Length: 295
Image (cartoon, rainbow, N blue to C red; front, side):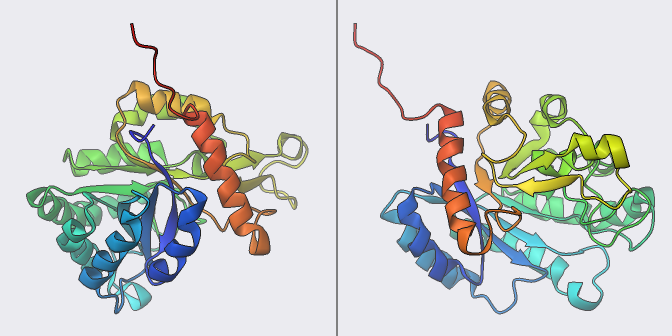
């Protein structure tokens, strides 16, 4: 089943300490992520030590990620664009060909107003990446934004994807997709995945639960929470269907659990939830490999 590895996301600054502790649970790959900036991380030394840690179990690094606003370069985001460049230039040390993150956006402006700046920034980054055999993928997270305003990301709605991919029509530009971010917008993720699967370069293992009784009584702007992000195995999605769609389309990427969101399996239960999700996703993948009988 190694054509579709199941892993988890680990923060880059913590990876060398955290991965040896959780690797024995059976994680097959790791997304190494940074928030706003790669900071003072020595990427070459980190890559060397990570590969040494992973080699014992045959695990791999699936992608490198940088989450910040590369379109503004202001305040805490001043190093985000340079971090995209840094990760593209150093991806080969980690043995990966994929960098993921947010697009960024012009703060509190409608999505379409961010497209020219997106074209300028990621048009250049996609060319830089293409020259090195690297792909770029954008997470479909709204970060509490909507079509008209927000601070972080424009890549959370399929109408925005149309604008983005028309602005930067490069084969190495795609999506880091998960069902949860679409579900909390009341978008059905299954037909969406079937339509967009060829642009899905990476999948986050994160689900959601929708309380339809609350939606029907109070709507989505009332006083009660109507949706929760969940660790896979505790949410509403049929991950067997998701993996089937991915495999039917020839998906060669990984599914990396994005933890720290579940309202129940968090805190002291964080890794309990993640390991449950790991084993659940492996079962949805088909369980253990069973050799066919010889003729």
